[in-house]
Length: 127
View 1 (tube, rainbow, N blue to C red):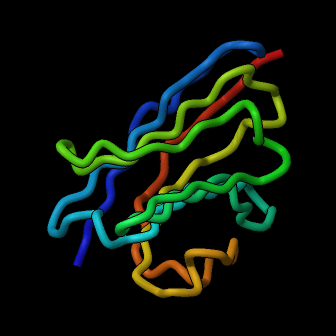
View 2 (tube, one colour; view 1 turned 30 degrees about the vertical axis):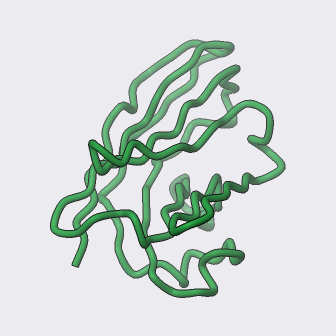
């Protein structure tokens, strides 16, 4: 079983940048799909970005963050990062990383495909 811990969230001004970290323990992330989701109080959990591992890695993004956010993995640190640039007030949310070994997670943006979750890190973008 893999355990995930997020960090890096803080208060930042609009137009700024942050890098979120998702550190894994208990298992290697090599064979997991790892994704970032975000959720505001009272709202649905929203897919942000996905990194598919294995022999041929790939990434995908939601339309709202495409071109601004980048997801990548550091194998040596067993950590997945989310580089967030050109932040907007609407990016304010609690960000969670999640991991899955389900084949469907490689192409699905549904949070229900992910069995392993961190507790989240808060990102606040001020205008």
